[in-house]
Image (cartoon, rainbow, N blue to C red):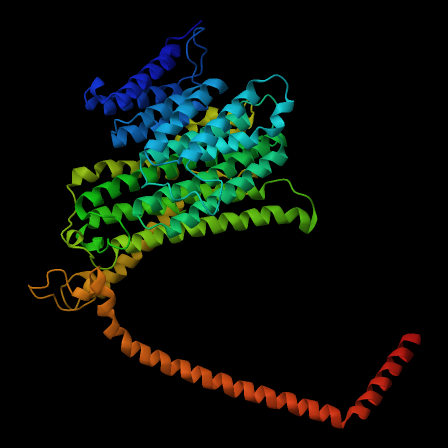
Length: 593
C-alpha cells in the first residue's frame, strides 16, 4: 500500500527544478517566487523528516533520509537570502539525488556555477569533475575491489566543491568574498563525502582509509584557518573560516568510516551527529554573519580590514549581531562550533587504539591539530571583529554609517536564533536527522537505546559524559548578569561624553569632522606618525644600549670565570688525577664486595 505522502519527493524535485530554472532565466518568474519556493521546499523537507519513511511508486524520484538534512540547510539558506541564483537550487537537487551517476552529474554541473561566483578556481573545476566521475565509476562497477582507491577521487571532488585547495601553500588567490554560494559548496561537499565514503559502498571502505581521510581533513582545516588569519577582506575571512570548518567536517567523515569499519556504530553515530551540528549550527551562524556583513557594507562601504573600523558606536545592533555570529563560527561555548568540537574530541577519545605510547600518539596528534585549527579560527574571528568594530572610523563613509532599520536585521537575527535552537536544544535538530544518522552508522532493524537523541544533552560517543549546552548558556548568562550588576552598583560614568574611539580626548573641532588627519588612511598617515615615533625611538634606543651594556658585562664575567677555572685546573692537575684514581679504586672495591 502506498501512502499519500509518498508523492512528496516528486513535489520537492519539481519545486527545486522550478527554482533552478528561475535562477538560470530570471525572467521566468517574479522575484517573489524564490522565497516562496524555498519556503515550500523547507515545509516539504520537514514533513518528510517527520513522517515515517515509505517507498513511493516505481519510477518516481527517491529522496532518502541522508538527503533531507542537507536539503533542509540549503532551503533555509535560500529562504533567508532570497537569491535568484542557480547555485542553491543546483546544490539542493544534487544533494537530494540518491544515485552515484546522477549525483556525479549534478556535482559536475555545480562546479562551473561555483566558479562563476568566485568560490572555486578553474583547476578545481577540472579535477573536481574528474574526481566525481572516477568515484561514480568505482561505485557503479562490479565487485568490491575497486573501493580500495575510492577515497582519493571522492576526497578530491569534495575539496573542490568546498573551495579548499589541496595545495597548502597555493590555490588561495582565486577566492572571492564569502557568500551563500560558499555555504552551498560546503554542504554539497560534505554530502558527497558522506555518501561516497560511508553509505554507497557495498562494504566498509576500511579503518585505514578512514584515518587517511581524517588526516586530510585536518590538514585542510589548518590551511583554511591559516588563510582566514591572513585574509584582508571581511568576507574572505568568513569564507576561509567556513573552509576550515569544511576540513573538520571531512575529519568527522573519516571518523564515521572508522566506526563503521571497526563495527562501532555508536562511535559512527556520534561523529555523524557532530557533522549534522556542523552543517546546521555552524552553517546558520555563517549565514547570519554573511547577511549582517551585507547590511554593514551598505552603510559603511568597503569591508577591507585596513579601511573599516569604529562601527561599535555607529552601528551597535549590527556589530552585536556580527559578534554573536562570529562566536558561533569560532567554537566559543555554548555555540554550535563548541558543540561540534566537544563531540569531535569525545569521538577521538573513543577510538580503539593499541597499548603504549605508539598507540596513543595518533589520537593525541589529532587532538593537537584540532586544537590548533580551533585556535586559528578564534584568532581570525578576533582579528575580524577588532578591525571592523573597534577603533575609530578610517574613512568618511564609515564615519557616517548608522544602523539599518530593525526590520533589515530581522533575517540575520532569525538565522542566529535558528543556530542557537539547534545547539541549546539539540534534540530537535538531531531528531529531524535521526534516520540519516542511523543510516550512516549502519544501524538496521531495532535501534538501540543509546542511538536515540536526548532533547537537552549531547552524549559522548564513548559513553564517558554528557554536555548540556543550555546549562552552559545559563552559567554564562549568570556570570554576565553579575558583572553587569556590579558595574551598575559601582556607578561609574565616563568623564567626558565623547565617542569611544576617541579614548577620552575632547571632541574634534568643526573643521575636522573625521578627527585627527594623522588617523586617516592615505599617504599622509605614515608621515604623520614620524613625529610621534621619534620620542619612542629615543627611549627604545636608550633601553637597547642598557641591554647591550649588561650583555657585555655578563660576557666579561663569564670569560673571567672560564679563565679562573682553567688556571685552577692546570695548577692542581696532578692532585685531580690522583683523586680520580682513588675514587675509581674505591668504586671497584665496592663492586667486588
